[in-house]
Length: 86
Image 1: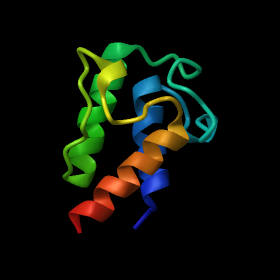
Image 2: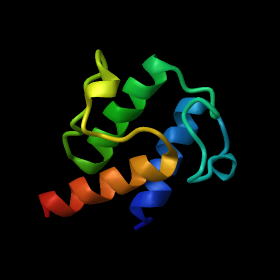
Image 3: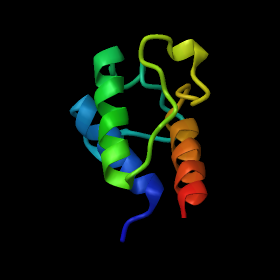
Image 4: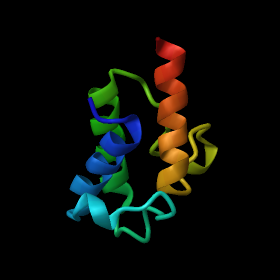
């Protein structure tokens, strides 16, 4: 089974219509051309992939506890949520 990091990068790459090799942990969603709708779709896809609930409010992203500042921060957040759940 692929790592959480690889699976999150695959999901983000799909949303950005990029090859996963074009998505680095240092990338921001803005760098990748992902807008607010793409972000919401990415969060839904991640929640479905990992069977978790991401504490993210699309209406007020700046108020969310979930850090979406970079791909690495998203991966860290998902790893923490998956660990909490198990």
